[in-house]
Image 1 (cartoon, one colour):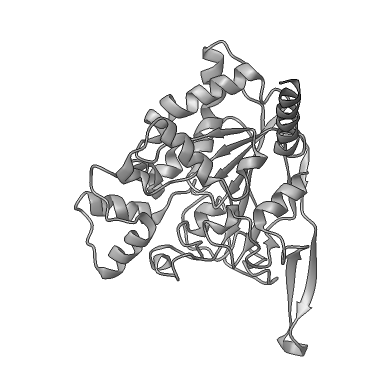
Image 2 (cartoon, rainbow, N blue to C red):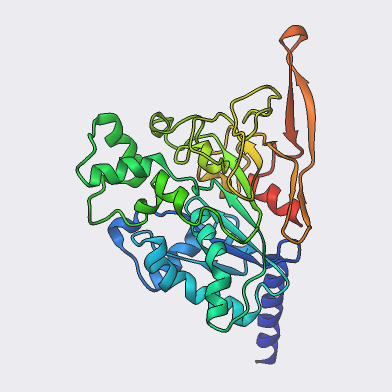
Length: 349
């Protein structure tokens, strides 16, 4: 019995040491799960879905997960029934007493923004200390909304025309054609709605962005998304641009493939949003996977946490091509054999 207890304690200590990123506990906030619209999970199934969502890379590197069902609304049951109990638990346990880092994917970016904007007031009103969130790592963030959600909600409400191309795009993304009874968080993902939800948080927590421009759908969904996209989210949203527009990069001087050239990128960003890594070959789901899909470049080499600590990436510039046909490219070192998530994790440590 003593030996078993010792092994269990060692395993728990080992997990804790692996979970922290640069000494900071990690809190995961997953994204939209289309199958929830029909299955409408609750209780332990929501938890199981959350664990499966992050299984490939981040699950075993995190201390806390905030799991939520996609058939609900962010400011409704997601906040009251799923976010709030976790925030209380984290505050009581002192999880973020010395700082913590949120890691979000897709719609988790929008949920995290709502948390950042409200957690201090909610916890103080409950007589609990606020969380000390020093940064949020946002992969394929949908905080600026998703044009496909606008189309899905319109179709579900009967106000949108649906042709074969749109039907295929929605079916690939959602697995179904939505109805008024099963749109849930898609309401929050509409571009104008998303951009109005906690758009100007009082908290100055840096939102560090990691973005792809590939697609799991062979470009089918991209026909309905402005500018470059990752198959689900357009770059204006994933980059954290201040306005919805057609952009081809998160930078005005670095393309998604790393080419150093003038490119259509945002002139300004949402408050405290800082795009860092980009890659032409990573799709919406690839960015949190454990596979190296393509070389990765940097819109910016680094950014500071709220407390002044810094996340920094090692890049180099190289010439490709010959003579007048040559161009300069920026590459994140070791990105040809390291996944985007792993690069972030290693840099943070």
